[in-house]
Image 1: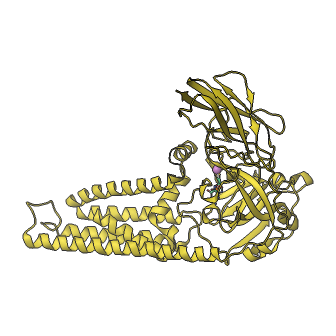
Image 2: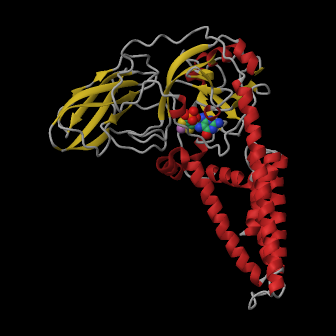
Length: 504
Ligand SMILES: Nc1nc2c(c(=O)[nH]1)N[C@H]1C(S)=C(S)[C@@H](COP(=O)(O)O)O[C@H]1N2
Ligand SMILES: [Mo]
């Protein structure tokens, strides 16, 4: 265990000095995420939410500890075999690190050096056991025991120190990135968001606010270490099929362009019926269609050769979006601001993509570094290679926020309220029913736009007993949400949200 600890601590120190992504735990975790089948990913998001990554890293550490114990026992019988086992783990870490999509050659060093040190520590410490290498004897002599304890203690101290130093290096790097982000002043939009009409937020107790504050906004991504780019060195390249003029620009160039500001609701395809992976923000950014036009791109509808726009992020994630959708007049954008703030690191600083009406995994690339025009025939993006659909427009959904499931509202007037979304089609109607009775029209919040959700409220005269509340929405095209219950894979969950309450 001590050898494993020493190994990980040294690796952390080197990763802190090189880059945090090179840490073996992070690299192996990333490799595990990439190989996680859709149902397991779904299950993890459902059960652990945004803590799924913490759970994964803890799981890796627990597994490592178990293997360390096993290797320790092996070492008591065959010292070289135990040490070789440690080296094998180093190879595993190095292979994982080198195989990350955005890997650099130097990323293998923390794993390699950590394993060498771990093997050495195991070799030396086990050599201090009575008999030099063999089985535990009746107990080391007083002198031998003291020597062993001293060596073990020194190893533990030095390891802990280097591990902490590694974390410190990473922390100071993060502080640098944070300072560069805080120095940014966003310009005013040339095209501001339309003022929200009064009544766009119903302000019912227990109901999600119309705008989701940044700190409450859901986060879904595969990044174990949140990328912390520096806006000064950030570059974006737009190239590929049918691009007449390749574009390359930096953050300052982007801010010099005309900025648009829009209220848009973002939704994750992994959102279960009734789930909370949806949020609304006021985004500030540059029109993506405008950029594509500037590069000479024509949509397929106008005879352009590329039907897919592939966005790449600094961590190697790829997301593919239909070019027709991006250029059909909706407010697809490269966003730099979120709710009056510079884009937070967790939501893609410095620049992310957004396309109203499409699920995040086919449109909302965070930590964006490259845009490539290609075809759906030629390229499958990250989640498409993992069972998810190529194209994924957002399905109409409605959610009951209050009363909470299994709560006990008092008999009499109860405000049943929630949100409903069908981005880019808009929400036309929301209905509620109790215990399978007649559908009752809910009152909708004033519409902000067809790219945002709407709140709804319905006053229920509750009598005592167990009751089931159900909700369904109708979008702007007149289509009502299907009752058919389907899971999130491959292109979004369907079905009505229902909540059971007990009125005492
Ligand atoms: N680089 C990168 N961008 C990404 C993802 C990711 O894993 N990596 N996840 C996507 C998914 S699945 C969703 S739903 C949205 C979520 O954006 P948010 O975390 O800002 O809410 O980001 C998208 N953009
Ligand atoms: Mo998502």
